[in-house]
Figure 1: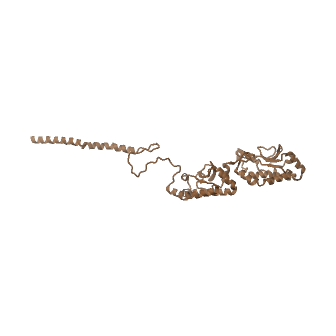
Figure 2: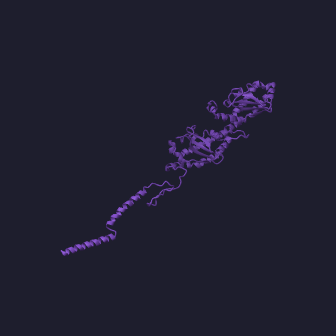
Figure 3: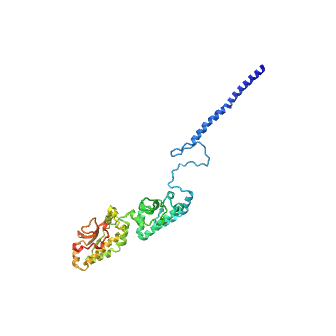
Length: 391
């Protein structure tokens, strides 16, 4: 019995020594503590990975190592051009960008000075709603520039070298762009010149529509873009008025002046068109509520400005010849005495002295054929009806 008790005591001592040795080596119950500590660490790592990116300019970074092929978030500012999907970019490259240099060369040759095209194809593509614009963006952009070139050619056929000079002047940057517009007067497509740029415009959901006729109203755009200063330093004339004067007035005025001079026996007779004053008076009236609401007034009056002016002088010649001035020395002398400065002018006034549509008045030795903006070109041949009663 004593032997067994001693053996059990020895085993207990050995077990105690073994536990001490195990603790010294970090084994046994310590393993359970390490595993328990690992769980919070893993949870902390998971929380960090899910943390949202900072709102600052530099994105927040993670402590987790990434493969060498990973791309770090870019901190470069966004480029001005909108990026297109690869398939669309290819269409734009093949059907527009590859043709752009040739079209710009055509445009520059036509204009006589270097011109360029500039627009964001990606931004414009985001507004495509039509199949043509969506599926053929490159062809669409090309068609816009081809349409503009066609419109410019037609404009030059009408207005010649003066039109070319004026377009180069008002579109001073010599640049064509494509832009959306909210202008209620443009329901589908059109053009305007502002900021020195020729802008090809399309209405909402109308990108790619009517590209071939995009510059059909180019003369209106040029006319609205600026004015041509008068050599005399008076009020400005717009391009349409100046062109009309050169086309319709200047080639005929000497012949008309000579005819009136013969009728009145006044070889030194001078005709005064008062272009600047009359143009300013009509323009001001057209800008008023009355002028804007007058549907009977010719909307293209600027283009016919030169013709109407010569028509008033021709009407005066025909009427005075009809009244007998040509062969009547007494009438001629009476006219000379009243119009002692040998000058006949045309004047637009707000209100006539006696007439309804037009009249003649003599002021300080000058005869004026008068009319109002509202009745510009109305019954122009009747202005001298009451001339005999005035002498």
